[in-house]
Amino acid sequence: MTAIDLTQRYIAATVSSLPAASREDVRAELGTSIADAIESRIEQGEERGAAERAVLTDLGDPARLAAGFADLRLQLIGPRHYLTWRRLLILLESIVPACALVGVALAQVLSEAPVGTVIGQSISVALTAAVHVAFWVTLVFAILERTDAETGEEWTLEDLPEERGPDLPLSDLIASIVVGVLVIGAVLWDLADPFVQLDDHAVSVLAPSLWPGWIAVLLGVVVLEVALTVMVHRRGAWTTPFAVVNTALSLVFLSWALTLIARGELINPELVRLVLTDNGVGGDTPRILAVLLAAGIAISCALDVADGWRKALRARRV
Image 1 (cartoon, rainbow, N blue to C red):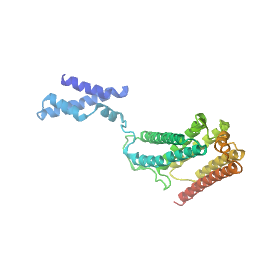
Image 2: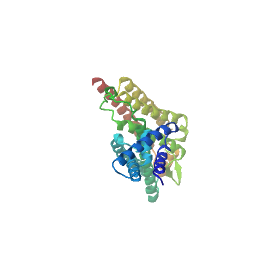
Image 3: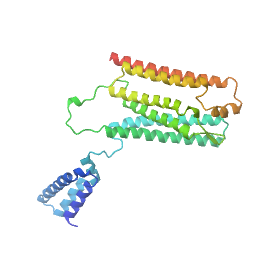
Image 4: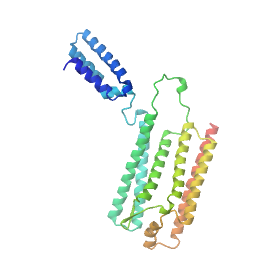
């Protein structure tokens, strides 16, 4: 193999993955650069073959070099966002799978399922939740990593980002997006392929009659909540209009939930029968549980509204 053959193979391997429009320019630039480097080593007393091999070895993997020409990122999560990604992933992985495990285990125990079924179903759902959390968190950060690329233009003071308020860490934005995706996925999964197993058959948690109208309202609220978080983050601070929108979304969700709870149409009647009625739990117990559920949702919405106004007022003072 001649030196020319080796150099041409290296150049061909480099430009093969580049866009067609830039291949010839890169081929010419790289060929000139390699030739100059080889000649420089020859002038220092090296033999041509050895000089050529040394130059190509120093250039490294052609695929990595091509990525540099194409401004491609070769890491999934780069150093800029890695620590935030790691902290958020650890936090969600320590909460979401555990909640899923406890919820499924409780439902199985109430239905007097065998111990093996309780353990198997709980672990299966917890592992599935852990995989989904890891996938969606990483996907969001990977997209952020690639849409936040630098333009290559010279940096100036005007490129400094606006100062962010104390209530707008990146992890909050990512958490909102991931939780929104998980909620939407869980709702659709529950209706299409229920993961709660009772009496050897799958039972959805939400009433199937909610599809499509009532479910569309719920999914719309979730999407708008995520969009609001994105807008707040881009704006750099909470504002009064943002707080108003947040209040409106909370009231819509609260009205949605309380209406369905009052009608007895939120939770799947078959699930209530299997878990409560068939196990001798009757009387005022279902009504008390419904009241507790409604109270929990109302308190959660009230806290969310109060938090939005607190952040908006703090931003105004700042």
